[in-house]
Image 1 (tube, rainbow, N blue to C red):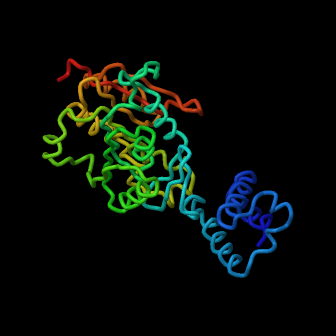
Image 2: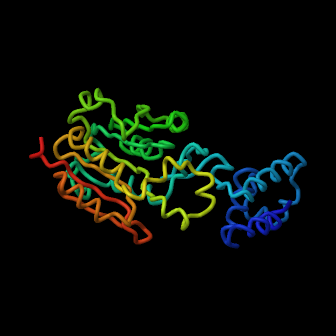
Length: 298
């Protein structure tokens, strides 16, 4: 199978541009062929074993398996993360959330003073870590920070731990259900964290029909969906925990569903968080929010 044959097969389920990009990524990352190599016809020179492997890859791709799962990794903030079907594929919007945190100083404002979180021993908690991409990125970019990451899935935590090992950054991973926190966690983590961040499940079941089939059929539903009648389920639980676990003037960061941005702002305000800010992503969608635990709320 040649590059042209592969992308034409993939064009059955992807548009032409995406089909070509996936085919090019396959040849480049699995077989080491550059686009120039393909133009020179080297894609016709694969060994029999490589041809067999390519056929197996093509079969998985034609079944709708995302290319990141097929290749076993995804890029995020300039790093390569191991991914499989136990974790969500890291997305550009989540990169922007990390960059927003990294660019903030101790007061949550643009980093205009010398002392920033980059050089301070901040304590950070990532809730629903998945592949670990948020926690590991923050730990790598803020090397003096102490980063903890939770997930309900033991399989996801295995992936996250391996990613931390590969990136050689220290993150403490714990299996915790954010909706059913053990009582001892509340006692042990009172006013501990400078930052709590989460990219929780936020897609309502009613939104499924508008989603791509390869997401619905391959990415973990427990990390995607919330009940139609309670879209703020995870945000409420995490914010309630943050009311005591954050230090006064500590910050809560979320990736959000644009459909519920204002409802979330209102909820956080009623829970006595202050300096609430909603931020749009590169696609112009309201995709992030941050809120401060006011110092008066002790």
